[in-house]
Image (tube, rainbow, N blue to C red; front, top):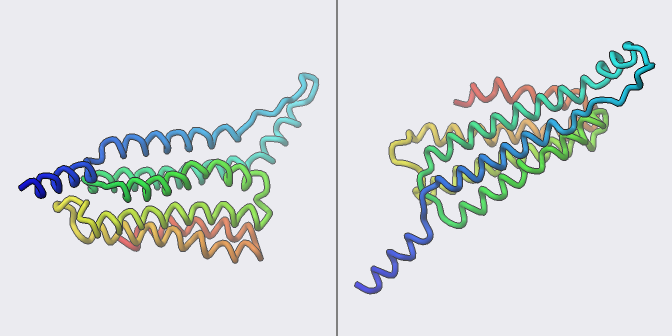
Length: 206
């Protein structure tokens, strides 16, 4: 009896509901998405300069703004997916905490490759860095799904097809970004355009 009681206490200590984990993750997403906008800086234009100079700057700034929009949308997709995931994962242990922290690490790093890409979108290294970071986000999200599934942490009410679809979505997102890395060596612009494939592919894998 004493052994069973000790085992029960150990299990209670190792497995918990996910409310605090989800709240912490939401805070990291909010922080990362807010940092993105800090790269959009208003130019210091002297009063005696014509409005045409400001217009020229705004046109030249368009690629950086588009990178910001893309990053915000992709982060939004990851946040929605993460939110749905932890509505279905109702238990976790310490290993799942660390897997989630690795995922959040890549999320919190995204403002840095976003800033690099905004400045050097024509450079293969900048495109590859951004793609690699995004690919890791997708990989870690799929790993969280697979680990939670293997440990029985997913609610029994969740349809099996949903778990499989969510796992595939994360992996396909990663594949698109990984494939874009060698493409960027020949054409950084084409590599960036290839990221748009994520959006239609998300619907085909469901």
